Amino acid sequence: MAADIVRTRSQLFDMYMTTSDQLGNTFQIPFPPKRIISLVPSQTEFLFDLGLENAIVGITKFCIHPAQKGKDILKIGGTKNFHTEKIKSLHPDLIIGNKEENDLERILELQKHFPVWMSDIETLEDAYAMMKEVSRITDRTENGDALLKKIQDGFQKYQPVQHTKRVAYLIWQDPMMAVAGNTFIDHMLYQLGVENVFKNQTRYPETTSEQLSELQPEYIFLSSEPYPFRQKHVDEFEAKFPNTKVIIVDGEMFSWYGSRLQFVPAYFSNLQNRLKS
Image 1 (cartoon, rainbow, N blue to C red):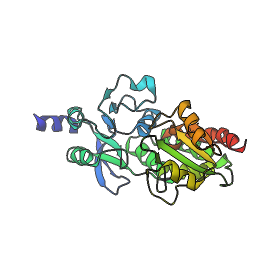
Image 2 (image 1 turned 45 degrees about the horizontal axis):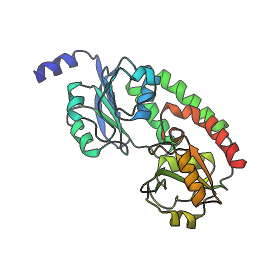
Image 3 (image 1 turned 120 degrees about the vertical axis):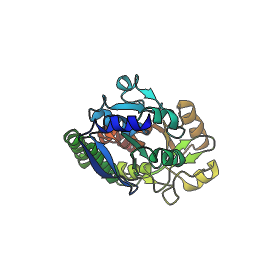
Image 4 (image 1 turned 60 degrees about the horizontal axis):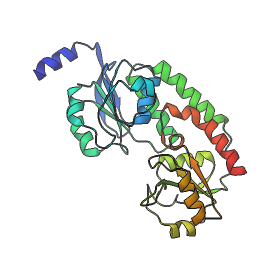
């Protein structure tokens, strides 16, 4: 039965394409892929924006954009705990994941059976490279180049503040967790034009109110994701840190590295005005 499926699937494609992902894995994929699974919300949105809605057969429950196009597509679990057996049953031609967002053990299992293209993104240049290659291997180069140009033009026109504002960017409440160096969010904070008070640490360290006080940030950014910070949290932090301005920021604008980047320069411009006030 499995051999019959392989023979049937192989007859659907005129050619195969060689690609290398951002972890250095080189492999062949059917071209163009006709059954794609995305394991990362920001990359899922990018695939839709490339015009691949008829090829996407599986996405995670966190793939919320675009809402209308994704609502009827099979959900294969979360980004960490996706269901490998459900994915196998979909017989994908291409799976697209990410080093940080996906569970390594499950990824290694999928790589035994399917082409899995993995991104590894810490900078805008990494994001641009991902979009360029994913556009190429899905036969959407023209669409991808147009979107990429729009994003790059937006960032080139954006004028950041002068990195004089000291900011703590928090992503979790209990335990309190911050964003540090070697992360895409840290890179985006630099693009905004602020100084991350945790920049000399790595990844997503736990912190305390005492440690936060010692770092003396002028602003605390409470991200809308993954922890759903709300106004009540702003009030709590303002009570603890009366000399610090607390702002809820849109986490998607700092952490989504796909086509949502086209909206970031305008968002940063508005946020910058709030920092100046």
